[in-house]
Amino acid sequence: MTGRQYAAAGVDLAAAHAAKARIIEAVAGAQTALSLGRPGAFGGMVRLPAGLRRPVLVMSTDGVGTKVLVALEAGVYGTVGEDLVNHSVNDVLVHGAAPLAFLDYIAGAGLTTEVLAGIVEGVARGCRAHGMALAGGETAQMPGLYAAGHFDLAGTIVGVVEEDEALHGDRIRPGDVLVGYAASGLHTNGYTLARRVVFDVLKLGVDAPFPEDGRTVAEVLLAVHRSYARAIRPVLPRLHGLAHITGGGIGGNLVRVLPEGVEAVVDPGAWNWPGLHRVLQEAGRISTDEMREVFNLGLGMIAVAPPEAADAVRAAATADGVETWIVGEVRAGTRGVRFAG
Image (cartoon, rainbow, N blue to C red; front, side, top):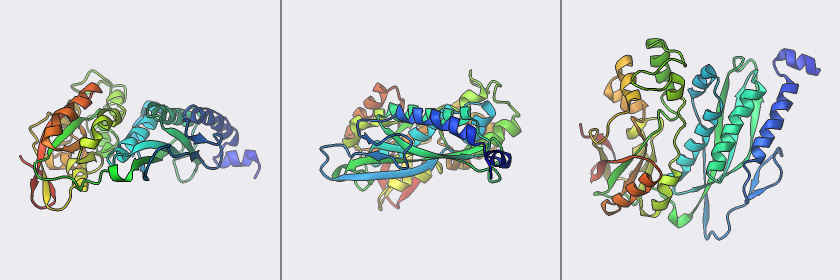
């Protein structure tokens, strides 16, 4: 095929080259002292930090789900790039790991330079905020698989932790307290249901005011997924476990860090749901049980800590501007999560 035939089939090589130039610039701006090689190579290289005794790599791959459809509707692309990074940083943070390197993957069809570069610039911004190398990534134009103008976004993070400092949840014991950290919004989960309620039931556009909120629908739904790295790292050695509250809600994620023989008892009266969640429940006629399964309900992270460390854990979060609550406790029992009301 000639370039013109390829463009007619749905892939514009000239536009791809223009986007690549901006992407390489963004990647170059998110290198660290541990980075090796040049941006745009076939693979990204990052040194391990010096001085580690028994370093363990902690890796995770995730995406931002159908939040990308809200970004498309609003014409705002950089925030989902930051979402992806912050979500991933939280995923390795729960194991005690510091972020080391990141790679993003964007797949779509008919994506413009502004869309592609905007996403990667958001990723780079998130990486710089965490002192993490953006080691590379991939953009794939796949007409026929994706509708024109649509895309999916995913990424892989590599973190590092000393083997004897890694968190596995095995230190959790009866008497520990649950410290809930405020979310900045829906984060990156539950958007399929949230979009149905907001756009199909309430019939709101992205520029409309969101009910019970001074912001627009786009501003509420595209609020960037909060990173808890700065709020938690100062007290990591004092924690017995961490749960990132993503898909599956509080119950589905907190159980993942519990050892056998204990249950986490959550007090639903310990914090108030944000207005966003109340609007979604009322307008969508969603049961409380389903709300708990789908959404974070205003808690983006839960730390499990010994009671004597609770004040210090909360003070570290307050210093970073993150509100916290004591939302429950750990008791002896069958492994699981129970809401006490």
